[in-house]
Every structure is written in structure tokens, then in C-alpha cells.
Image 1 (cartoon, one colour):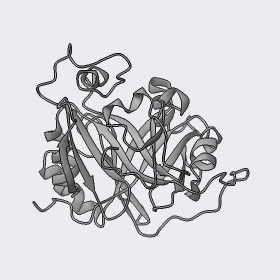
Image 2 (cartoon, one colour; image 1 turned 120 degrees about the vertical axis):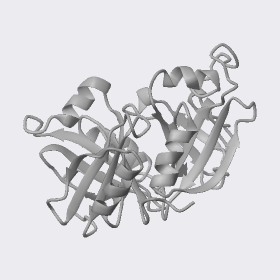
Image 3 (cartoon, rainbow, N blue to C red; image 1 turned 180 degrees about the horizontal axis):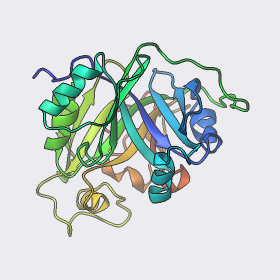
Image 4 (tube, rainbow, N blue to C red; image 1 turned 135 degrees about the vertical axis):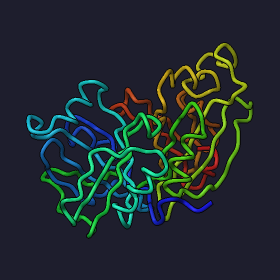
Length: 299
């Protein structure tokens, strides 16, 4: 099936924090993220970190919010945590027409600056997360801010974002049919309580969509310590949301590949997991760390 928007790529995943410096110990020092680009804008300051495989995470902080309060509102309502996916497209005007033709209604459309044109899909239509569509004339480069730390470890690879949805079909209509993600794999949990589809674009990160299986019921299968992912517990964790980013997966260098996963990884088999860092330990965003040499099929 040919995508409606050709040439789209998942460029980065953005997380919101109160201050860039809050995120540096984890994303720069521990995970080895290198400064790629960033700066201060009206309402927000984006800072992109690049990892060993080229995957990027964008750290957003509020800035001059009196003139543009969107990020301040987000933090006040939700606290720090996942904010948006950015897809780069070769022709934004064409992409918007195709999105509208598929039943999506882009908002915040700005085509006034040829260096950077953007639009957004609201979380209500975009499975619970903001999706930014952007056309960039040039790659953005800038020097790191004063005080940006030296990584304390060899860089990790940002391999995958895992996004939970109540129903795979609307998510596939967006990320596969419209935005052109190539299906790498489809499958189910060993106990049959959740299903997944893995999608990839021209470069990392990939995207895993997970959904409670239709046969899973709210009262079954969620044993003690199962976390938000095992079958019915995933459905409960989602609640009435149209979707929710569950975690970001990083492959990290380790000496022997051994380690144990905490309960938050119960959405996935724990094979190969080195560590699971729960949202309350990482500014609202769960991380799943796996060994560089372990299979990522389960992450």
C-alpha cells in the first residue's frame, strides 16, 4: 500500500521539561546524547540531542511564555513528559492536502517562512500525541549552550518509541497509510493479551504501536507487579485516552548484557532488558534500556 505522503520520516521525538538542565544528567550524561541543535524561541526552547545511530530526542523547555503559552499550559496540565512526534516531509503544502483528504484536520499551519514550515495534528486525531509535520529547507545546526555537559558514557542508540493505543486500526491509518511507515513486524504478546505492529522510516527511531488484544478483559491477567502493560492493565493505563506514549527504548553498551527489568516493562517481554527507568525517575518519560547486543524484537 503506497503512503499518501511520500518521503515522510520520523525525525525526532520531543519531551517537555521545566529546564533543559533538568534533562542533561539522563539524556546527555548517562545516555551519551550529543548536542545537535537548539535555541530559544517565543514560548519554548527546543534542544535536540543525537545518539549513536542518528536517532534524536528533542528536549523542550518553556521560554517567554507570556507571548506564547502553549508549552506552559502543557506542563501545568500534564507535568513533564512526552510531547510530540515530528515528521519531516518534502512538500508540506502537498502533505496537508493529502492529510485533509484522508480525514485529518491540520492545525497551527504556518507556511510563511521557507526555511521552516510546519503544521500539527491534534492529539484527538493523532492517537493521543501531538504530531508535527514540518518542511525544512536546511538542517539546523547551532553551538551547545554554556554548561552543556560532556557525556559520561559511550553514546546509546535511540532505537524505538513505543506508543500504546486502544485500537491499532486508527494508528495504522495515520502512521502507516498516511505517513508511510514500513511494517517491519506484527505480532502478539506470548500470553495473547496485547498486539503490536512495528513501523520504520528511512532512519531511526522506529515506532512500535501496541494495543490490548480484543480478547483481554479488565479483570483478567494483571498479576501483582505487572505494570501498565500486561493485557488488561494496559487497557486500564490507557483509560479513555486515544493513545499514550509508553516508553522510549535505547540500546546501551554493557559489559555482559545481563540485567533485570522492572515492572514497567511488562508491556513487553523483558528479554535483553538492562534497566527500566520509570516516569517518576525520568521527568515523566519511561525509558527501557537494552543491551546493544540483545535482540530488540521484544522492546
